[in-house]
Image (cartoon, rainbow, N blue to C red):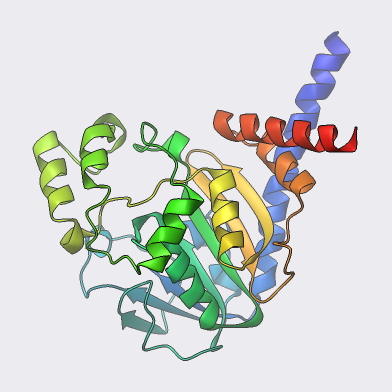
Length: 285
């Protein structure tokens, strides 16, 4: 029994190391790349970050909805020089031509958008065929959204059909009711939080949508992306690497997806991975 436990512990440690190596390997895909980063730059992409891609880039352009945002005011400095800073909506890149970038990076951006599927379509448009979309999305379980329901794919498709804008108030009441203020260090009190939420079109601070690891994959697949890698990471991050114009089957197999979920640090992912494995086993029986 002792040996079984010891082997299990060593196996989990090795798996974590493999995950870290996988993120380092993913970073190597962007050697010499030209990248657009809506909402960037992000410390998570810096040399000491979760996915250290900045040191490998040839050029980084960023895009913000305004000259000053609550994030730029917070002084999120990185070790990456920016070539150009564009002003515009992350989901509407009218000023960017087709196929001009090797990749789009987005760290904690997708959840802030009224129409994530529309944004993913735009991001693919500006990336050359065979290029990549690299996203980090907050996992509900590790954030102040943990009381809120996961946004369904049906809801996201409805948002895409009606081209939902950033001024959409659909989720405001839910946010005010279920937001866990104790997990929100950026907001000192309830009054400030509610004021910020009600001014959400100006502050862009609310999470219109809530994700777990499986829903991130399904969202990317619904947008026509080929999912190459999924890595849920503590304290609250889901790393998802996709290819533009890749395999039509969505990329990551159900077996690989279930395995990634079972090794997740988030309990809801592990439960989903176990259910996926059970469905695969039943299909083989």
